[in-house]
Image (cartoon, rainbow, N blue to C red; front, top):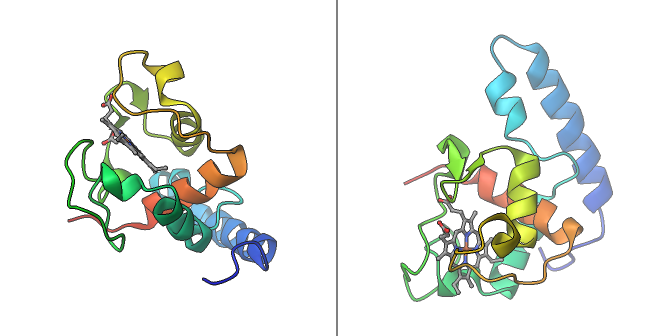
Amino acid sequence: METTTKGGTTAGTLLLALSLLAGCGEGGAYDAAMTVPGGDPEAGHFLVRAHGCGACHRIDGVRGPDANVGPPLNALSSQVYIAGVLPNLPENMVRWLMDPPAIDPRTAMPDLGLSEREATDIAAFLYSLEGG
Ligand code: HEC
């Protein structure tokens, strides 16, 4: 957790290999869709704290003011839509995180200037949350 980039590639590759394996199993399509190729959930956890997402969202494992400016982000892997406008797929989650107003000009969530790399890791972290 201290180092965010070291080993990221290896972990990402392993995750990808695992998700491909899982995809071969019975009815694994939905689960496979919720893994983010190349995303590192540990780095994502760090980035969510570093970018202050907890100032507006309740997120498991992220300390914050218990804010409800945006919705809680603990059950995203079982949600059908992102922000009510985008089908909940990993590539859409990355797009949303990189620039919410580009997707929905009226949204209250600001563009936080995330790179694609950061958004990918954050998406991987958010999908790893179990709900609640
Ligand atoms: C200034 C407050 C604010 C900050 C900071 C913020 N968000 Fe949001 N976020 C919102 C609001 C408000 C919405 C609801 C948007 C909508 O429905 O149009 C939202 C929606 C979302 C959604 C879609 C949730 C759903 O249930 O569909 C995700 C995912 C998300 N934010 C992730 C993040 C992440 C990750 C960060 C940090 C990088 C972050 N947000 C920072 C206010 C914020």
